[in-house]
Figure 1 (spheres, rainbow, N blue to C red):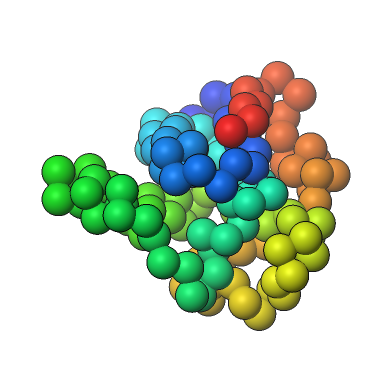
Figure 2: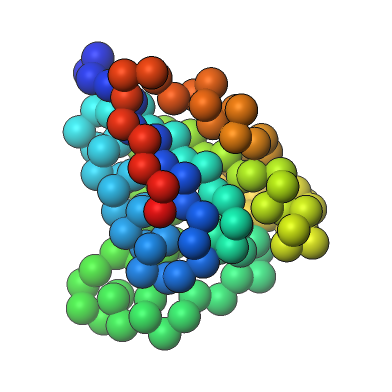
Length: 127
C-alpha cells in the first residue's frame, strides 16, 4: 500500500446502479493502494444480508463481462476495504447483525466510526 490519502464512501441509496458503482470505486481505489472505508447506510444495508437477491441488472452485467455485486464485495474484502454497517440503518431495516453475510468482514458502527476512519485530507463521497 502506498502513503496516499484515504478514500471513503457512504453508500446510502438502495438503487442497484449506485451501490454497484460505489463498489467499483471502492475496489478500484483499494487496487491502486488507497486505504478505503465504506459505510453502508440507509437502504444499502440490504445487499449485505444473507438472503439478499440481486436484481436482474446484476445478471445482465455478469453476462456482459462486468463484475457483479458478489464479485465486487469479494474484491473489496480481498483488497482489505474496511466495511462498516450503520447501526441506525440496521434498526430502520429491522435487521440484526446476525442477519448479515458471514463471508465478509463487516463491522457494526455509525457515522462517528466512519469519521474516525477517514483522514482529514482524504476523499469522502456520498452515494
